[in-house]
Length: 453
Image (cartoon, rainbow, N blue to C red; front, side):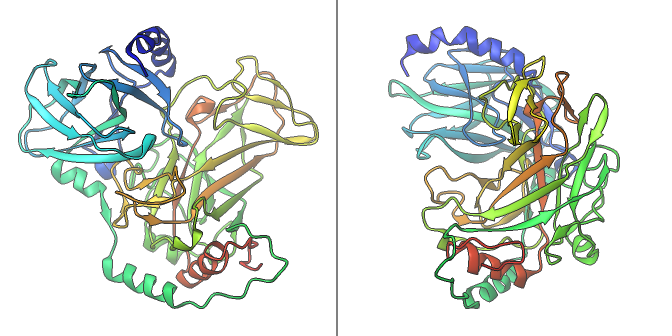
């Protein structure tokens, strides 16, 4: 994109940033209590920057098509106490050149970190770069992101930065048990696939068919051990899920609102309200599939794997035609919009729906990360590679609500429609999950809830 076109977009970008209401600094939860996530669009000042929506579900916005000399200023970034600092940046690049420098105090102040930019495969093919600083100014700081490049033209997009105390941010990276994973993987590799009937639909897919279970203001991924610390969530699946949930408690407490019974996972979404009245899902189908060119590369999830899709902090208008919006399904479909334009109004015979898609490529090491997203990525070219080489099933929630809506619209516990998000804390029986991945996904065959063709 040329510089003149970029400058023409600045006014609209500034307005977009205002409308999002994004916070410059947010805590990533007690699993990584000292980690601060700074959304790229939440700058206090900038030069040469425009914004656009990321192509991935839950990615929010990004500072796009940045070139040499562009900069963004972030105020009040809490770098925590003195000592080691872990720093990360989520970036994408089609050209692979230049660097992103973080300075404190001013654009020419002390260098906090430098991220060398290499090609990621496209302007919306995201990767997370990490580095560390042995020393840094303590407490809230003004941080400048400055773009450096010896070549002309745009060279990088930035989605967010994170800053965390070395010890505590490491705690946010949950490493799997290598021996247990290798044993699970060996058992999966040894499974003989069942022959696919000749009349089968050749779509790589199986599912868990779930009902609403219970509600709590808890989030065992973002706020583990802190009962009541979250906004209200509607839980699906394992009936024991609360703030103290762990992999062990999920496997130990076998009651679930999902079929098959071998799926003991916990799934949750923000509670929906209509005129102040709770509207719980009438059903949620959790699809496990593949968007890869070759689904045969897919492996099961390791026990205790967790991730989040969507962004509870994203507060932006979502009128008709927006990506990742609520929609109407059934007779008559959508017949209008709410007064604020953010919600569909469904015909009496239709149902309010939402589909939430999770990342499907994994770093192969971590069960979780400080942001609960940094260990996974979405495929953009039908392959998993680079920092996320392991193909995992593509999970999506298909959520149906027993309402057609009113002109007043709705509100999520996380507020606007744009803040819709979901969490998955996986705890399947290994054999049941392995056979489904091997029979249905690897062989590109559509299976039902029971795992049959």
